[in-house]
Length: 79
Image (cartoon, rainbow, N blue to C red; front, side, top):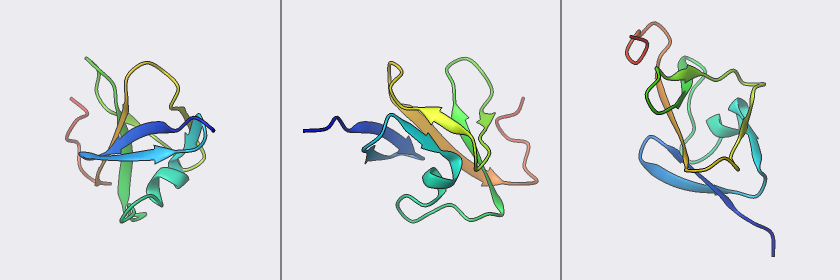
């Protein structure tokens, strides 16, 4: 039985079969995130980190990775 890795998009929890997931793969999970939205990874105590489509994120780190999206022109979360 292979290990499942959990992550969140907005407030919905998803499971992934691999320890790593790319920005493009995150965009295609659940209802999907359109290309006109930016994808961010929330990191405790830091501004959200912009995740490129070809960037790989390690889901094996302690805790659960939390992704969120916002309009490309928005600056929320980048304070």
